[in-house]
Image 1 (tube, helix red, strand yellow):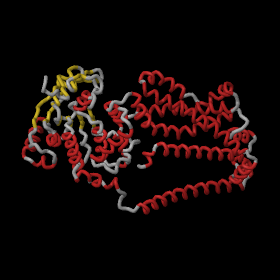
Image 2: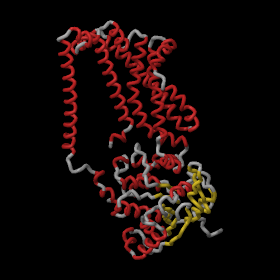
Image 3: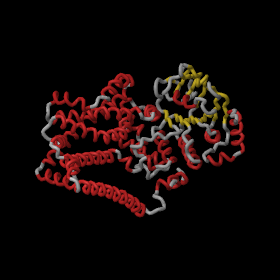
Length: 260
Length: 283
């Protein structure tokens, strides 16, 4: 195995079903995928295809019925280490300031208060929230709140980020700006990112690979390697290239969405 | 970061800076609205008192049955001079505060800790409902037998009036915490106790304070009912004694003191709430 890097996340033949009023409803049929080191992948699929179930299974909040989830080559019981998790809801604690919310993970792990505060302030500054550290979430706009949530995730220096439609509730401008920042910080920190989204344009503009899921019971329907040139730091410029529209159209066709 | 990102907050001026209207002008507008509300309330109160005074001054039977504002004021003055007003109010206030404190402390501790175990909370639920449905007044004779006619029995009555409500509201707050928020804490590596301490307890504060405001009144009722049953002082005793002697204005005078006490305690809880939940002040 020398010289071959172990990918941070390997999913092998995972299946998960729910017991719904005595009926077994399969949600994830048979799902396999790999997240390589330093890679950004997007997962798109029709609504209700079990994307959130997949994420909760990966985070160890739900146990799969069968199959294997390997983090850095190892199966983990409970929550995996060094994995950051972020949802569409910012889930900020209203009684903590932006700084207090950012420090949450460090405090849980018992990092010394002074160090936790320094790191958190630096992270807020990096995300353009300088001067807002002592504001309560109720006084921040949606975009700023989501930036605080991102700071809370990134300050723990996770190897892998799992994001479930984190920017879906934001307006277009805020979304592009925070996407830019997220990709920049992930690339610079050599982190890996799995983005679950239903926004195909977002999926294509951010990711190295887009994985298209089928309807329930979910399996992988198609995988696209996105090749839009090496420099992809400007989210607006990316969206203007003809290749971009081609990818979006093909994935849209794959999703097989019937207008009624 | 690029310069573009650094200006991100400035792009959202609606939260960063106050609106177009000057602060002083808006503050004056709010103050005026408050004054208008207060003035109307005072006018209604004055009209009621004037009608009451007028109706009872022309008819001796009415004056006997309903008292009159001037007679009530007279009794208040007399009770203040002979010291019974302060003594009775402070005794009832002490009983209420002790019952309020013990009842809420015990109820909230049990209510919050029930969050820890679904099993225990399900076992306990029917007992809580059964205890909560007992009218506390029905327990008064037993309480007097067990705890005597002094302070302890009144505090016990007051505590019992409070404890179930405090338990139910704090439990409701604890189980109402967003499960996504609990999941987030878990993915950050939090233990069950850390989830409890850093999330469940502060998240329940809103419900706990709603319970506190509610139970101020209940604690007072418990104390007064205890005094009704058997006691030698307190506002409940004063009301009971004046009532049995048909001195209606004195009943009302003691009632005014009771209302003042209730108002004072409610305002106190409100102040503590604002002190303990500063994040709600900024909204």
